[in-house]
Image (cartoon, rainbow, N blue to C red; front, side):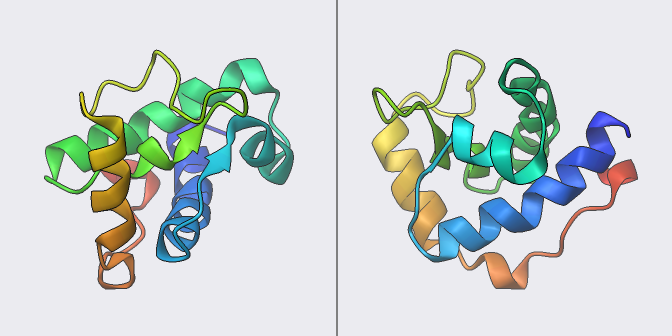
Length: 104
């Protein structure tokens, strides 16, 4: 399965979490999609790029470390993480379509 296909699987999980104002740990997401933790960042990257390209709140900002509650070093979509998370939580993700793999 390609990174883009995995991103298509991850998108609805993150949009649901965002609509519930829920931060998701890397460990939680890894367990849900049965991917080893070290490879998770590569799967989140297409989502981050898509959000930047389409001027959407950084959806990947809500995937965080269990220890400190912030995204890892691969997160570059925003400098102010709490503000990015607030924008992500307040966005109406229901109106956004789930991107297809070729859109990532």
